[in-house]
Image 1: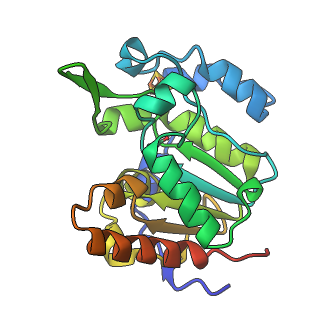
Image 2: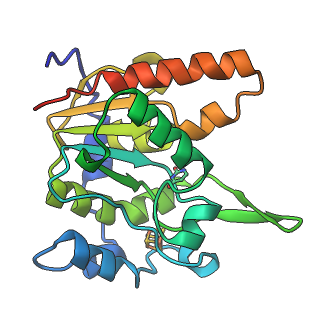
Length: 222
Ligand code: URA
Ligand code: SF4
C-alpha cells in the first residue's frame, strides 16, 4: 500500500511517558485478558466514579485492523462492550458494506469509561477532555502493543488528535494513509455518531457513502 502523508511529529509530545497511575496497573506480561481485568480497577481519572464499568476494547489479539473511537456511550456503559449502541450498529453496517471481515477488527476507545451529564432522565454523552485522554492512554498503548495492528483507523477527531497530534484535522486528511510509530499505517475518518446526527436523510446517505469509501481503503490482505 502507498503511504501518502507523513503525520506531524506533534504526536511524539503526547507519547512521552508521563507519571500516570494507569501505568502502575499494566501487567508485566500483558495479554488482552490480563489488560481487561486490570482495567476494571482503574481510577486514574475521575470518570470511573459515574460510570457502571470499564469498557475495554474487544477483538482478537491477532486482528490486523484496530478501530479507535472516543468514549463509550450509554449502551456501552451498560453492556460493558465498545460500539454496541446506535453508533456501533452504524459502524457494523459500514464495515459490512466495505467488505471487512469483523473478526479481523479490534475495536476500542481512547477513553474507557462513559462520560455523561444528566438531562432529565437521560444520560447525555460528553467529550472527554485532554487530561482524561492522557490518563487513559496507557490502556490504549498497551492494547496497540499486544495487538500490533497493521492499520489503525481513528474514528473522529478525539482519537485522531490523541494519536496524530492536536493540530491534526480529520476534515483535511480523512482517508489518507499516514505514517506513524504506532502501526505501519494510521488512517483517520469521521466518527459514526457524526453520521447519525446528520438531520437531512439525503446528506446522511452521502456521509455514510463517504464513510464506507474510507473503510474500503483498508487493505483486504496484509
Ligand atoms: N462512541 C464511541 O466513541 N465509542 C463507543 O464505544 C460507542 C460510541
Ligand atoms: Fe482509568 Fe480510563 Fe477509566 Fe479514567 S477513563 S478511570 S483512565 S480506565
